[in-house]
Length: 316
Length: 250
Image 1 (tube, one colour):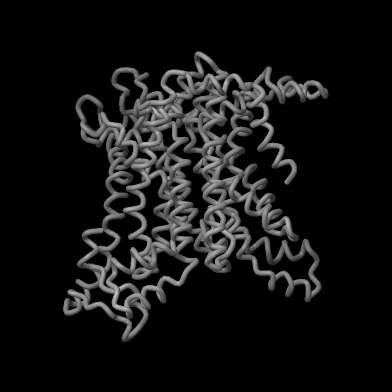
Image 2 (tube, helix red, strand yellow):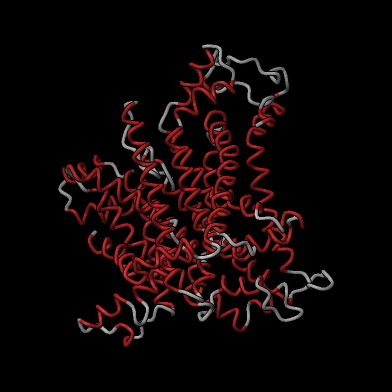
């Protein structure tokens, strides 16, 4: 805050002529200097993000191309990272992320739509409790979550037993909590609430007037969704899916606690490098794997930003 | 709706059954419970303090002076959701100076980053729900400097937003496992896993305990904030969306 003293001139000085109420020490400075000074107000934030987010990421990218002993440039880390079990890890991670973003995405949209359209006296209460619950559950990843599911869907656990009693032996159908299908089921627990939270603003951008206009022109419900609601919502929906995909890809703790590494997921493989399970000479392969993740995320975020820009056209 | 409800409540019930009431008693007497919870709480407090000092002036400043930067800020602050903590901690452990690497406070510094999506969005929503510009101009015309304006005019109006940011930060820090375990710090979540190997019942009980503590915090905040806003004639208050239309994603 200290360095804002000399740069913040007047809150609201954008309001137009005459709005400048505090004298600015920079008033006499040339325009480019003033423009630069205006950005100084965000300097603490930018510096913080740079130090604690950007610099570590850069160091990973550099490390991915370094020989761990000599620090010389090498392709071998990346080469190892895109072959064999690590390639398999990337495949499994991407499949899992796809499953754990599309399925919760659809469910989350349905839940959000349900509380968005709910009417009546209970609606307000329902809305508030669902949103609050979403806030909790979306943050409730990780280890406790894995334990909840082991206690309910493990091979001898409660729900598995109930389903068995009514003739549904899920473990005979190839389901297991400790495989991809199980991990997807667990991820849904925090992905659906996350989806509800991030799609609600988009739903609330759908104006009732559009619906009424469509109905006045004789549109049926499906026609409204096909030609009006759907196209308007689609970019937001897709960009939310990108975020879900990224969050599934990033998840580590849940899968680690659940499977202890029986499914080869990239995030778990990276973690095992940090825990010291490394062959000599391969210390930097973990960084190469991380670099791979960063590349995937960069692609995701580019799509996200583009879709957001498109979504912003209609949803204000 | 019903299916969703069942899906979310069933595991909780099953876990309760599994842990049993005796499990909960054991949680408190197991060695390490106090110290790990205490560490997590201290981390939460420090993370909160840094987040607030960093984010409140920044969001207010951007709102008032550079509205066009808001979109950029939104994109930047969403990054920690998609950047894997595993990846981040590798880089951090590589570049951090040795003294910092050995201390638990490194975690707090990184948690500020992890909390960015939540802290920024909560504060931003709060700022959008009031007319910052008019307020600060009014304060200015009454002779208040920018510091007085921020402290006496804008902050009191942001109380709800600050509260919801607080709670989301606390929830995040109390549940974060990845970074803590890879940094070899025994925070509360890391402690829970440690006990998994010896006594699963205690682990499950501690997990539920952690969930309920967070839950009660959140409910408390929502209720207090709603009461507050009703008194001042404001709208319904929810955690994420003080002004529902404009939170994440637009």
